[in-house]
Picture 1: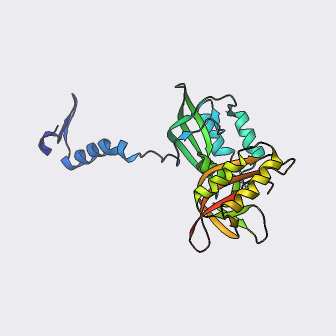
Picture 2: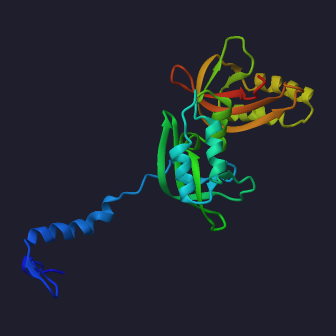
Picture 3: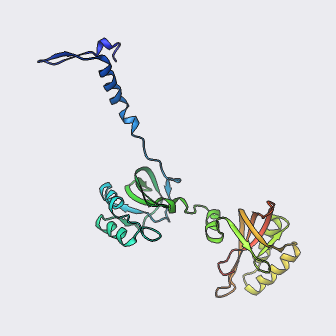
Length: 262
């Protein structure tokens, strides 16, 4: 290390020895030392591990992925122009690996590009479960919203932004005195696998456990368990015990038919 400016103010060669101001050398030296620190890494997405069942594009190299992001993310009516996007994937040998086993851990983000509002794509470097290094492309908003737990999956499939709405006179939702009461109803349904017997058991259990018809909007905070009744073509019922907050702000035990055919 230099102990003083005097130590660094003389720069010599075989042909030339010249004196330069010490502050210039100090500035240049510090600039070179600090330059790597100024190149900050791009932030990772909200979750760094891509689940096995989530489709992600894989490219042969960084250059191919960068070409897709730079030249084939043309805005469309609601999303990107998929025809142009797919053309870019084909030209750059980027593909969905259908037989991928295990998750991919995102190690770093190489590039992030906004095609249009709500349409952000990232080019990432990652590692597969077997240790293979990969280069991939993700639609960031879709990836961040992907459900990773049973509760998140329930919210995505059975609610609108975490809320269920029940109209007056609509069958399919009940308020029970407690979670235990809701679970008792599910246990009654589960004592048979014959639909007619299950429907009869449901009606008896709702009455026995003091469950009353629910009306209004409910924000779901917990999912406990469910019981399935195979009622026939587009008549299945999936009774689910939930904890929810009603429109008054009160926490309630909600028994809800989460079937898409309700």
